[in-house]
Image (cartoon, rainbow, N blue to C red; front, side, top):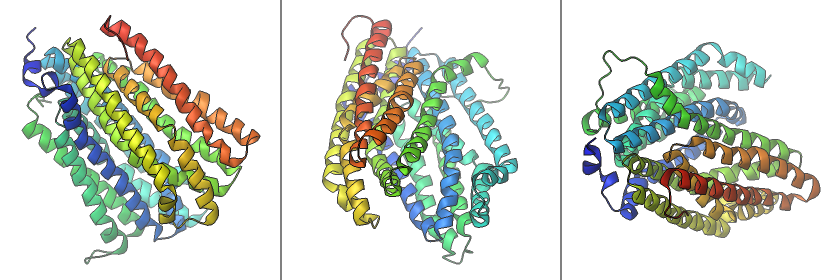
Length: 455
C-alpha cells in the first residue's frame, strides 16, 4: 500500500526534535489557559458565597466523569487514527473519525439524561442544606443538559491533534476559554446590561464557552483538515473500529477517573489529621495543574507522532519521538519543581493563607514537587505505551500509583509519622510507579519495535 499520507504529513517527515516542540507548544498553551480559567472561575464564584463554592465542589465528580469518558475515548481515537494515517489507510482514517463522532454523541446522550432526570436525586444524596441543593441543581443540570459542547469540543480537537494540526486545536480551545472568562462576571453579577444570574450564570458561561470551542473545532476540521473526509451520510457504527478505539481508550477512561478517586481518598485521609492539610492539598492541586498541563500537552504530541510513525513502519522515528519526549518532559518538570520550591510561600499568600496554612502548605508543596522528575518519565512512558497500541500498561501504572501505593502508603504515614512527613508518600509513589513503567515500556519496546535498544 502506498504511504501517501506519510509523504505529505509533517509527522512522517519533519525533524522529530523540532516537530514535538511545534506540535506540543500549542497544546501546552491551551492547557495552561484551561487551568487558568478554572482558577478564575473559582474566584468569581467565591464572591457569591461559601455555599455556592460547596455546590460546585459537589458537582466536580460528575463533571470530571464527563471529561474522563470523553478524553479517554479521545485518546483511543487519537492513537487509532494516527496509526491508520501513518499506514496510508484513508478509509480506516475516515471510519475512525466517524465512529469517534458517534461515540461522542452517545456519551452526550447519557449525560443529557442525567441532567434531565438525576441531578436532583444526586444533590439530595449529597447535602441536606437547601441553599447548597438549589445552587447545585441549578448549576449541574445546565452543565449536563448542554454538555454536548464540552463532549464535542474534546472529540473534534482530538481529530485535529491526530492529524498534526495542534495549532488549530489550541485556537478552538482558547476561543472557548476566553469566552468563558469574559462571560463569567457578566452573567454572574449582571454586568453590561445582562441580568445577574449567579450560579446559573456561571453554568451558562461554561456551556457557551464549550459550544464556542466546539463550533471552532468543527469549522477547522471541515475547512482545514484535509486528512479526514467527513461524510456521515449512510453511516453505521463499525463495532470492530469501536473495539479498537476502546482497546486503548477504555484504560485511559479508567486512568482519568482514578485521578478523582485519588483526590477523594487523599482528602479523606488528611481530614483526619487537619482541615488545614486538606486546604493545603487543594491549593497544591491548583498549582500542580500549571506544571503538569505543559507535560500533558507534550504527552499528547508524543502519542500522535509515535502512533503515526508506528503505523508507517518507521521504527527509528518512533524511538526518536519517545526519547525526545523524555528529554523535554524532564526539562518541563525540573523547571516546575524549582519554581514550586522557590515560590511555595508567595503562592500560598495569594490565597490569603494563615500562618498554619503557610507552614503545612509550604512543606507539602516542597516535598511533593521533589518527585516531579520521576513523573516526567512516567507520563511519556504511558503515552508511548498508548501510541504503540497498549493502553493496558498505562492503566496498570496508574492503578499501581494511586490504588496500590499512594493511598495505602499515605494512610500508613498518617498513622506512623507527624503531618509534615506524610507528604513523602507522594514521592515514594512516583518512584515506584516510574520503575514499573520503565519495565513495562522496555517489554513493549522489545515486542513492538524489536532489537535496537530501549530507553
